[in-house]
Every structure is written in C-alpha cells, then in structure tokens.
Image (cartoon, rainbow, N blue to C red; front, side, top):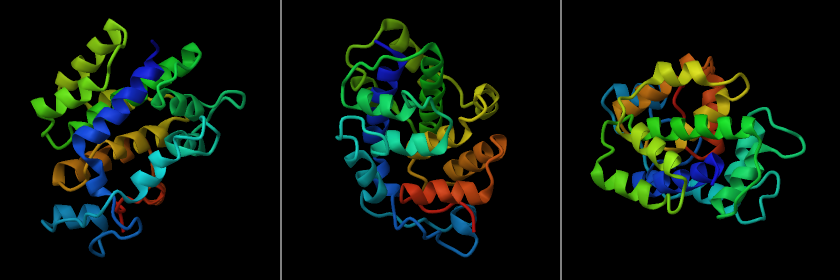
Length: 222
C-alpha cells in the first residue's frame, strides 16, 4: 500500500479525531478587527459553527476522483501538479479506498502532507491517547513501515522548522491547507502554529486568508 493511500486514511482519521468541523464557521468572518490570530492572542474565543466548508469539501470526494472535486480538487488548485495525473485526483481515489498508481515523486509529496497533518494535529498539545487511537484505527491495512512512520510522527515533538525545510517548492500552499484541516483553530497554540508555518513557507497574509476562505475557516489575519 502506498503512502498516498496512508495519507488518505490518516486525513480522514485526523478529521474525525480532532472534530475539525467545529472550527468551520462562516468562512470570511475573522472575529475581531485584528483577525482570528489577534482575537485568540487577545484572549477572545473564536466563533464555531457546523461542518460548513468541510462538509462541502469532503462531499465532493465521491465523484470518481474527478478533477476539481473534493479535497483533491482543492489541492490541485493550490500547487503544481502533473497535468496527466494530478496529485489531488489520486488523493481523492485514496480517500475513497482505492489504491492509486503513483510516481516516486507523488509518494514523496504524500509523505510531506502526511507529516504536515499529523504535526498540525499536535499544535494545541492535546493530541491525547484517544485521538491517537482514532487516527490509527483509520489506518486499517497499511504497510508496517507506513504505520510505524505515522506512530513516530504522532509521538515526536512538534517541529515546524524541520517540516518547512523539507517542503518542496510548489507545495507550500498545499502543506498549509492540510495543516489547517488538521486543527480546530480555537486556541493560542494553534493560531501561533499556523502563523509560524505561514511565515516559514513564505505564505502571505492574503494567501493564508484565501486558503482559510476556501474551506470556510475563520481567517487568521485582518
């Protein structure tokens, strides 16, 4: 089983474990005039809503992996992809339980996004044993080395700089998107993590807010 398939399983597992639907609000609202980051760092709570953009996004992952649908379509819109076999289409297939045929480069990209999601899920310091269990339960039958890698990332200290250093050119926005989806975005730690990640990946406040808006998440910056 490929890392792409493992990424698909872990993505669903993290979304379930973290209950990220809670962070999907009205999309364009940012709390205070200082944006969500200023609101949280100022001690105010962020708004929370229903599934919002998350439901719409995952709801699109039932179209046979067609370009432009679901999570994969979002990834395709944010990064450089092979025109013949876009990365996001392959991830859509993986989320649906299929075993996509991937290149070595796409396997490497899947590994980066896997690290991004698991790292972000730990950003609030609250990825407890129950959350880890839910994530690992969604792995099902994956290669032993892939399961071992997920466990190691879950248990390792948070390392923003190490992740940023390994992100290939052209994947910055995709890494940011997958990181955003892995958190509830309702704490100082999570807002700070995304801010550090955006700065490390040279993602501007405008681009960050655009990505948040795509998934119906509160904007980080004013």
